[in-house]
Length: 130
Image 1 (spheres, rainbow, N blue to C red):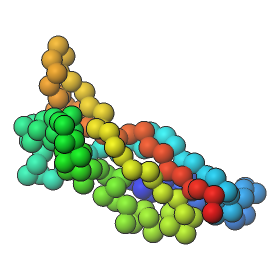
Image 2 (image 1 turned 45 degrees about the vertical axis):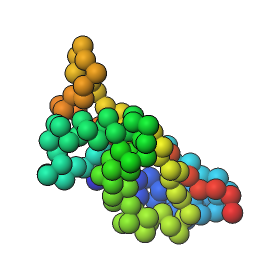
Image 3 (image 1 turned 180 degrees about the vertical axis):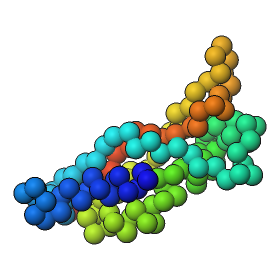
């Protein structure tokens, strides 16, 4: 669903669509917003302890390990092959993510609240000048 919405947003730049200049003809194009992209964790890794351990790993000294583990389950990135097929001709990319996802804490503690999925919701996709 998220990918379809993003493709739809890009399609508004299709030639002849409302007189807009095609996306590929712009020097700079930025798509930013809350893309509501949560972690799509596999069933075997969806337990509270597993997710908590991955989140804590993001804050460890070697945070790239925990971060890489979580990024594998990001809904936007995991759906990227299909999405990239739509965006590649337009040269639209996403910069690398080097920070932990946003997540809720249990009230009065520093523990992850399993009622809310961690997410990298706010995303920025862009096309640089060629």
